[in-house]
Length: 185
Image (cartoon, rainbow, N blue to C red):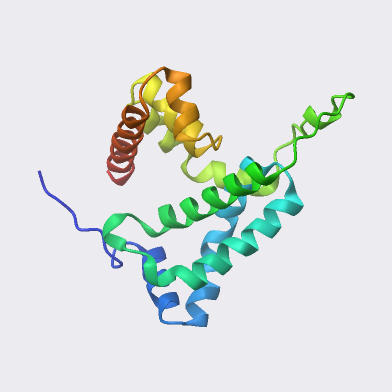
């Protein structure tokens, strides 16, 4: 089996992050231009409030600018690193929200119309991603979706699937590697 070294040459987002680590403002503008729509989609999906997602997006890029030197292309693709930052920030914001016990139920009603950003993000990789998810065992696919699309913690997922916490971590790690392999082919 041929192994491939992940680096900045085959990952333009990683190359931009490396330039941001060197305080290259033009690279930072290019990084924002190339990745902000996808990150906004992730944040909107998780936070469900446009204003909060916009604030979170600004905070994501502040963190990227400050932490770009910590990015290691050997550990994963640039876009994956950016999505992880956005996802972690969204989880932090969701946990910090006060619990609202409204009696009228209106807080549970969602706008069913897809937003433009969501449609754009979904069009690009949705079919390929769905095909790759179908290669996973159903419980593993459900765990990955729960963690990375719904913002569930490893502990919540372990309880949901009735497995030990370390088993859940192993499931997620192996499933992500399998998805990455599938998406790179």
